Amino acid sequence: MRVFRGYSRPVAGPTALAIGNFDGVHLGHGALLNRLGEVARQYSLPPTILSFEPHPREFFSPASAPARLTTFREKLELLGEAGVAQAMICRFNAPFAALSAEQFVDSVLVGGLRVRHVIIGDDFRFGKGRLGDFAMLQAAGSQHGFAVEAMGSVTVDGERVSSSGVRAALAAGDMAHAARLLGRPYIIDGQVAHGQKIGRQLGFATANIRIKHNPLPMTGVFAVQVDGLGDLQLPGVANLGVRPTLGGTRPLLEVHLFDFDRDIYGKHISVRFVHKLRDEQRFPNFDALKAQIAADAAAARAFFTL
Image 1 (cartoon, rainbow, N blue to C red):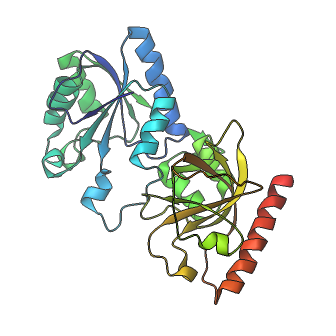
Image 2 (tube, rainbow, N blue to C red; image 1 turned 90 degrees about the vertical axis):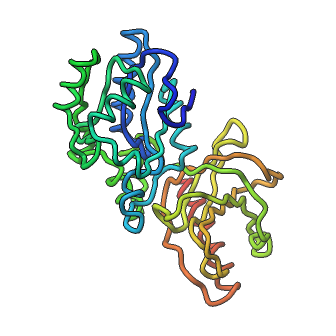
């Protein structure tokens, strides 16, 4: 997948385009991307997405912005797996936020992306003051020669699929419901880094992944499956959080793989969160922490043998 930063240089040719933030790349996004692929094949156009970095809510209200479900890299990987050929990422800053709806169409969609067909979600708004809507985009399409369509909401058991719904499920520890909304288990990936080797002292060596999700969409101890270390998914137990007992302050993902003893420093792995065991907590001493880790590992093993 080709990635373009900004719209100052036009793409090479006309595009079929889907617009969105795509945080989490959930089932609703999946429906949008499936339709994008159909249109792209019908008109022999490259399937292209337009997204924004940072998320507009992070720009306007950084203190109250929701936790991201995916890092920038994770999002691009998921979009590529969904068949996207090109991604234009516009930096959402003060000048970009000041673009009127008309300027957004003229400069970004027509000038930068050379659109021939645009697909949006049913709640998409654009331009300064969010004054641009589906009707305005349709009128602009008639003027500039591109088609516009809006996708309806996707529902699961009567619930509209949304990034906020996934966040709520994760925060509640309902991994199964989050997976239903995402169409897959919730995943965090990253590179295994050297840590303080405290896990080995406690009898449970861990693969440590420093992550960029801040704030975290969830914390706690989980039964997990790990991809990236061979053909099979490997079961384990993981702690996601700041490790309060050890005085941690930065988010860290620690994964203990069952019956596994290989040097995997530097490997890029994907961790699937399949079941929450408990919340992260502070323990009075190392012995209490060690006992709880043993109990967590036993609980995770039991989950995978059910």
